[in-house]
Image (cartoon, rainbow, N blue to C red; front, side, top):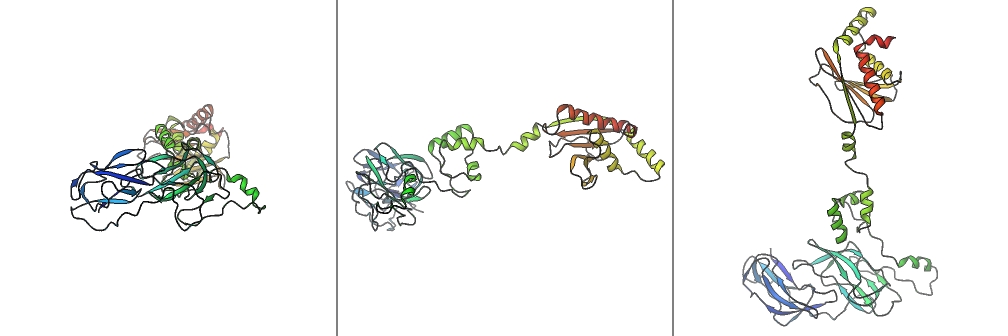
Length: 420
């Protein structure tokens, strides 16, 4: 597919560029980065490089000709033959001319600049001046972003913002007038949406008194429009640089619904967002205590209880009572999980503790991290039982965690203690 070579903008107030000389001839083989031609404006002269490998074809302007900024003046094609698919460049536009068909204030036009040779449009990241606001030639007027770079664009003229012809977040063709700067303060500054192509409500006429209160807050910058998550993130160059240096992810601002475009002050919001890794951090910082007791004592107690009562021992209920008692809250809710099946005792109680009975399973230890409530886990086979307590620091203090594990282990080692 052919690559277009356009007339670049070397200055913000530039409408046309003059081709000083072609350094490659039509049909010549070129490589990306080769100098194709020299272009001159009233401010600078520079060499323009080829945007891709191929052959220079379809040259539309010769040495000494003025070409409007953004116009296609040649193609880089796969073959040396002209394709005939490029229209002749349009006549140079009058300096400061604005799009026709609209009633717009008179003044100097500010165009969408070209940041790269293969660029045909740029996205306005943010306007730094509002309609009607005074501006100096060197003031930052707006920020523009392409797929390769983001830069701040100066006004290029002294005066007042008479019209803003595109909104933040909109893509605008290179070389098109997107703002007008007038010498005098405008009576009715214009602000419109480029895509719609129709001017929004202008500053109310003086005879209309009712809208006057709404005119006062019109001086600040237009409110940025939120951009859907997953799309292009609009941010100033400084904000991007600082975010990169600090390891901050601007996508988190998008996910949080914070409106774009983003500036340096928005990084404070990003820094204050809850850390997505907080659950993992909490798990790593959780308390984990272990104890071992002989398995024989609890097994012998269950055998004695069955012989004494003539009924099978309800092991989950017995363990739940031991755990609640060790917690210092007899009768509190304890959920007992045995090989994937859970049961809360007493029934309908809100569990303050989870007890996982994995004794007899192949597991000999666990390290799962803190959960919503403290967790006691029984593991082991043969003559030893391992008890693991895991909890968050906010659930049990260190002394409480020690008391719980010590008390539960003591009851398994000497079950009759629970009956006293």
